[in-house]
Length: 476
Image (cartoon, rainbow, N blue to C red; front, side, top):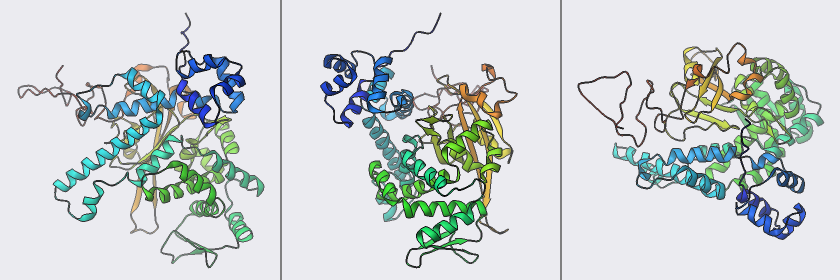
């Protein structure tokens, strides 16, 4: 017996789309060949959004139909659900159907709630720091300060699915216009900067900075400590700042950051995005990735970029007209701090606390340089195929500290057969899947032997005369 099709009640999304195009209900109904009353019922979720109406909407507004996907809503629901596990809300539980309705009807409000909750946690953590003896006016002022710029910027990229079409298209256009080639291009980029902008590039061993641009002297100085790959990336980054300042301004203005410093952080991030898109132009990169079955090391050779850059670029392949596999991507250090996190899938990361210790991204540090594979299942039953590997770099010289990270890349199990890394793994063996969670604080698994903290809202049962295999025992 076939699975019953799920009805789509997406009235709020349809209403927002109509209002963005400044159409009345009657005008849109006319374009869709519907009666105004029928459209009104759809917008008020009294009727489902049918496939026929969905196809008409795609034609009228010329949009990708994944605009009406529920995947982003599911991710938002999961994040808010994590927040609501806080004891702060224990006296007033919000049921899952209510939560889904809030996200569906007002996703903007839902995101504001997440930002507010994050600010609350930061305030709470700062208060604890002060209580432990932290002093100084700066620490006191930060208690009521806005969201941290790097966190706010990461959230912005996250909710954009780490894809910026205007920047991606601009980079691809430049690549084609200048007849650039993969796996090289330093000389070509240096020549382009001189020819188009009268900028002279100097590679200086004595430079105190990795990159420094002097607009008055029309001079770009790159450190000799940078590798060839890094120099090419910095050249592409500078081209973006020179040629697409207005485009960056427009994207940043739409982000409406609460912290003024976030504007500068985001600008750097967007220029880095452009640089990656120029070195790995969308159509060519997607085609090669599919041909090579997403073999990261093969793609490294073809495009002459790092392992981390390939992983990051794979997570950005979400162009509506030509989507790649929806990957999640993250980078962590040995202490578990997540410094980069992006997700084009329904996979969501912990906003507070550390990640799950059973996740293979942490095991990567025990086997440096080796690609680890893992089939992992979240508490909600969704299963993911995950790979992880360490990456290292130094600023040059034996006495210089080395930076070590682990990079994780993954996708839902349905996409795993397309990846070369799935070779030899039984993807249908559900018992072999490693049970992971978002983080110990919000994980529902009470039988986890690796648990570092009890879950929020659970009371611990302690009996001094007993010791069990599990680190915590909970009252029923």
